[in-house]
Structures are given as structure tokens and as C-alpha cells.
Length: 488
Ligand code: ADP
Image (tube, rainbow, N blue to C red):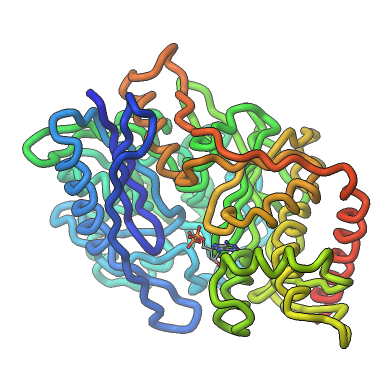
């Protein structure tokens, strides 16, 4: 067998990739955009059926390419988003509630301190509407079809992976993996089981939830074309990227520079509890071993560049930001804080507002563009400082991916600000690569039964000691600007 398929069911698109085991690269890809709807302010919904049909479409396109040489399908997916469906008809009972949906924010804030503490100690998360638990509770409270299915013992609830695998296997597999489960706010990340106390507090019956398997487990079998192929290997998107970037050693981490910024830092088999408001989560579980990670995110990173382009019209393409930023030697004292919708870790200040400081009569758009790019690197520095403090581990290097990692200026500046090498692989689809690697391991296609390293070497940006002092001063200036953003 020559090929594997990695299915990446993301928030805005569903994509599938054919990985060629002998050429060691993706050789074919198919993509379908998926819609989102926003029926009320702060609400985000998706049509689970649309996700399923488009996933089936891209899988079939890849299967046609792979023909008889297809060994199996690995899956990765947007996390936290909840689907509730009827376990007999297979129809969703309501729209999928998206991870960005804030409809349960007030409900989460009103949880008593004891429950909040329980959530933190059992799940490693901070109590928030972002995670799945309150979304499931909301549907049980407000959706008559969910209540009827529950009474009839037919209700199923899970993240997008569970729904897709249930559909692909025609209801035979009702499963998820530990990384997806760890984002529900219902999963005990130390015991690796649904947490009875939390299920009880949220009045969520355990039997509507999927069976939780390891990330390298066999998930079931599906028909693709005229063949039955195994569904093998599963992880949430950020965790799959950690795997795809081969961050297998504790102290290694990856940063995804997309609309927002996601940092995952491997803490080995130790589950580190964060004192800085970072999330403790499961990195992956393979070969009977569970590896933990600390996770931090910035809500806005590349979106700042989009704002320069679409909001201010300062640049016509995102790539142009690099040319402008390198046309000046520094920001000349200008700082930007990308708090468009508040600040996440480590500040957790929903009321903070974005800020541009230090502007003088001599400030040009090049300084402003550079300040926006630098703010992304400074935000990542905030997160890595917290991670090192919380875990006692020293960051040995960072691997990067996501749209904005195409920016060489940003990558070099990031290396200078962190003081460690920033390593950008040639193939930046780390998420899909991680799913393909888990699939290969699950199917026994790897040597020594270990995770293979499908990652292709790319470019390494090494920190320049000569710029260290300037970067430290810049970072101090950024922290000062953040303090002002927090006062707003
Ligand atoms: P997402 O998966 O969150 O939609 P992507 O990984 O596709 O995001 O990255 C898109 C983001 O990257 C956009 O916000 C865009 O502004 C930014 N981006 C793309 N290319 C560049 C570039 N060369 N320099 C800076 N930012 C970029």
C-alpha cells in the first residue's frame, strides 16, 4: 500500500490530502469551503450535515486518486464544536454549536467557585464557553428535539470527529480520541475518562457521549469507492499539528500563525498545571503513553495583518507587510497591542482594547506595519515565558506553521525575541501531516512501532545575539503598551 489519506475537518474548510509513503509527501489534495452562520450577536453555528457531505466529497476525490493503493484514513478536526444527533436516523437535532460561539458565556461565568475549581483540576481548562460542555448543556435545555431524543435513549453528542466517524461507519463507531475529549471540559485528563463529578454537575448523561480512544487507535472502517478502508488515527487540529511538527520531546513546541496564534508546548508525561492561565491539555496518546502539553493562544495575530489590508488599506496583500516592515530599521518607538476582542493568555482581559502607541509626526505606515508584525512575536514571547515558568522546562526551539509563517521578517524577529531557533518546515500543512503520521502508526506501517517523522526540513531562523538587547528593550516597550491596553 502506497498511500494514506489525512482528512482535516477545519472551521472554514474541509480538506483531504493523499500522503505518498514512498515519496514522503502529499501528492494530491481536495478542498471544500464550509459555511458558518451567526444567527445572534456572539452566536456561531454550522451545519453538521454540510460538514459530513463535504468531508465525504473530498475523501472520495482523494480515494479516486489513491485507487487500490490506499491503506487508510487518518482524521483531524476543529476542536470543541459540538454536534448533537439522533442515533437512529443520524440527523443532527440542531445546528452544530461552534467553538467561537459565546451563547453560554454568562452561564459559565455564573458557575460556583467550587465547580470552577473542579473544572480546572480535573480538565486542565479554564471554565469558558469556548469548550464543549456548556454547549451540550445549552442544547439539552433549549432544543426540544434533543430532549425528545434523550428521552428515547437515541441522543448522541460529540465533537465533529465523533459525528463524522459515526456517519462514515454508519453508526458502528461512536468514538473520539483523548485530545478531542480533553477540550470538552468533561474529561479527566489524568484518569483519561469522562469525569463523573463534572457530568453530574452539568447533568450530562455519560451514555450520550462517545467512547474515548487513544490518538493512534483504530476508529472503524468505512466504504470509499468500492473498498472498505480503516479509519485509523485521530487528533484535534492543534494537537495534530504538534505531532506533524514532530514535537515529541518535552520542551519542544509549535506555534501556528493563522488568524489567531496557537502555541502548544510538550511537557512530556507530566501534566503541568498552569499558574498563568494557560491550558493543560493532552498532546497525544500513542503506544500506550500519554504526552501532555501546555497551550496558549492569542485571539488575534494574522488578523492584525488583515486589518492593515482591509481596514486601513495600508497594504494590498498580506505578503506586502514584509516588504514594508523591512524598509525601516525599527518601529521607531511605535507599539501595537492586537486586543481587538480583549486579550487572552496570560492576561485574560475581555475588556482590553487594541492600541497603537508612540506615534509621532515622523511615523510612517512602514513603522505601523512593522509594529503589527512585531506584536505577534511579542505575544508569543508572553506565552513562552509563562510556559517556561509554569513547567520549569526550557524552550529548546520552536516549529512554526500557519499562513503568517510565510513572512520571513516575522520568523526572524520571532527567533530574536524568543532567543531560540524558529524552524519552518517545507510542508506547512502540519495538521494534516500529524493525522497521516497517526494513521501510519495505527496501521503498523512505521518502523519500531513509533510515530514516524513525515516532516520535511525547511528553513531555520537562528536568533542573532547582536539583536538580543534591542529585542529585550522592544519587548519591555510592548509590555508597557499592554499595561495601557488593560486600563481601557
Ligand atoms: P486560518 O487557518 O486561521 O484561517 P491561515 O493559516 O490560513 O489562517 O493564515 C491566514 C492569516 O495569515 C491571515 O490572517 C493573513 O493575514 C496572514 N498572512 C498570510 N500571509 C501572510 C504574510 N506573508 N505575512 C503576514 N501575514 C500573513
